[in-house]
Amino acid sequence: MKLPSVALLLISSSKCLAFMNNVGNGNSHSCSTTSALHAASQLEQLAKVTTLSIDSGDLKVIEKYAQTGFITDATTNPLFVSQAGLSGDPIYAKLVDDAVQFAISANEENEESTLALAIDRLAVNLGSSIASIVKGYISTEVNPKLSFDTESSVNRGRRIISMYADMGVPKERVLIKLAATWEGILAAEILEKEGIQCNLTLIFSFVQAVACAQRGAHLISPFTGRILDWHKAKEGRTEGILPEEDEGVVACKRMYNYFKKFGHNTICMPASWRPSRGPGYDLDEILALAGTDRMTIPAPLLEKLEACDDPVPRMLNSIEAQDCDEELLGQGMIDEKDFRYRLNLDGCGNDKLAEGIRAFIGETDKLEAAVLEKIRVATSS
Image (tube, rainbow, N blue to C red; front, side, top):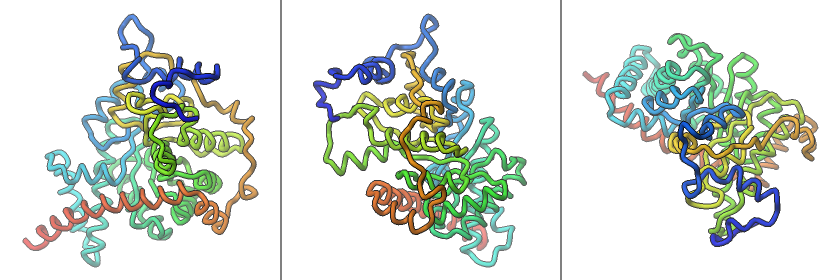
């Protein structure tokens, strides 16, 4: 259902009207400002029905929101690691220098393996710093260049966990992030059997989510906003849409419901947010998925949630999920042929997965170039 901007408030169905009244007010135009005389903030309300993570690599920002008591976890990705490594900030420069010295002292066989170790160590250094701030999970991503290499992804995951252990961070607090390619899903299956928990990221299609759950992934990260982006671009859509009809919201709700109906323990943690109804309605997707297992949210949107005290009704729950009309996929275990076939039929999943991997590799390339220069300077002196 597409809505022109002049008619965004003229909702015909009572269900949509209730959603707009109770959930859709999380925007800059109509949100009530929190005060001592008002109800709890939307951030506090949301934290009661969904475990919240901050999506950031900025240690000061993470600490700020961890102190609220509403944020328990933190997620990072190659972009955040790259930004930290290239920032020049003394705090992060120290993390980079330590990673370089660690890699050099390991006496790796060649420059390429030294660089790979330094990049992993930098990610762990950042993650370890974050672990000292939040009390829950931290996520550290395997080099995205290995997204189609199961064996190497497994080995990198083990190495990352080993480095965390050496720094006093138990594996129970670490999620190894892997792109949800077929090879990444198989890598997660292997690691999970070894007690290493995984976060399968770049989820844009239903088949990715189901395959991850069937093979025991601890957690998935569907990218709600990027799913919406794809459909808007495909249809040439410029006007707003109701949050409950937002394709990203629909996809995440479907994944959550399937997991609950068929007894999968895989956590559904949406990420990447867009305003369903357009500018000024930045919290639409977040509020439309209130009640999902977990969410990871960037600081600017956490700030908006903290500044508003409009009601946050629960939109997803495991009891209602039992009544969804989803059928068991792949007889309970999708194989490679079925996975690739279904993913290729899903334009959004296929396109956005490739785009996401390319983007993460691009950020990794920038960081590798800078770290390699430091390695060469250090080894030539």
